Length: 326
Ligand SMILES: NC(=O)C[C@H](N)C(=O)O
Image (cartoon, rainbow, N blue to C red; front, side, top):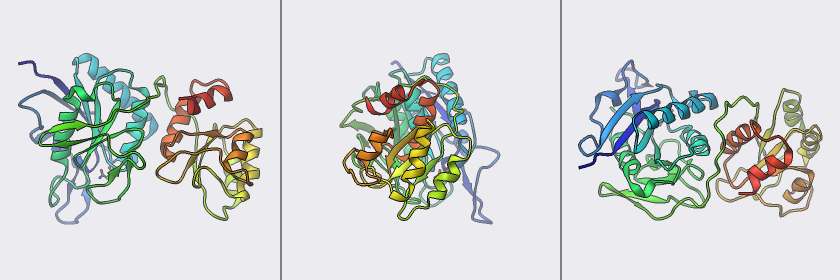
C-alpha cells in the first residue's frame, strides 16, 4: 500500500510546552514533548518530524515566517512530501497561516495546528488537533486549498480564521464565513473550498508598516506621531464598513499626500470595507482620497499583505489592484 509522506514541522507554542508543576507557569523546556510522543498517523503515513523553531508565537516575526516558508518548501522538495503539518502557538497562528498562504504556490496541503492546553494540563487538546491536522494534510480533498488551520475538529482557511477566545479550546472561528470543513470519526469532511487565493512572490519582509486601531474621539497626535517616523505604509482598522473618526482625517490625508500608502480594514471581525458613507471620515471620502480598501482581512493580516505587496508593487495603482482586484 502506498504510504503518503507527511512532513511535520514544529515551531513551538503551547502544544510544545509543559506546565511547571511547582510554579504553575507554562514554559518551553529543553526538549519538545512532541518529539517524544507518538506522532498520530505514524501507522498509516510515512511521517517525517522536524523541529524548526521552539518559540512562543508572540515571538514570531514576519522574517521568521518567511524563513519558515523556505524551510517548508525545501522539505516538500527534499522528501517529496504529499502534505505538510506545522505546529505553532495559537496567539499568532492566523498571521503565519495567512502569510504562508500568500506564498504557497503548489497544491500540496499545508495545515497549521496548535493547542490551547499544554501536554501535561488537564485534558490537553494538542494530540487530537495534531491527529486531525495530519489527516487533513494527507487528504486529497485538501489539495489546492492552500494553507488551512485545523483546531478543535474544525478546518478553516488562512484568510478567514481568527483566534476569537483567549483560553477556550474552541478558540478559533472564521467570522462571517464559518469553517470550510470538519474532522469527525477520524476523517475529514470538506464542505466548501476557498474561492480565490492571492499568490505573492516570497520576498523578505523589510517594510515598516504599523497597524492602528481607530476609536471614538481618537487623538490626531497619534497619527501625526506615527507619520513622523520612518514609514513605508500604514494599516488602519476602521469602524464598521470602513469609516474613521473625523479627528484623524487630516493626518491621514497628509500621509497620502506624501505618497505613503494607507490601507483600510475594519475592526469588525467579519465583513468587508466598502465605499458607502460620504460624511467626513466615511469610506466613500476615504476611497476618493486614495485609501486602499482590503477584502475583509483582519488588521494584522492586512498589515502582512501590505508589507509583502510593497516588496514588488511599483505604483499606487498596482498596490490597489493587489488588494482590490481579486
Ligand atoms: N495556546 C498557545 O499556543 C498560546 C501561546 N502563548 C503561543 O501562542 O505560543
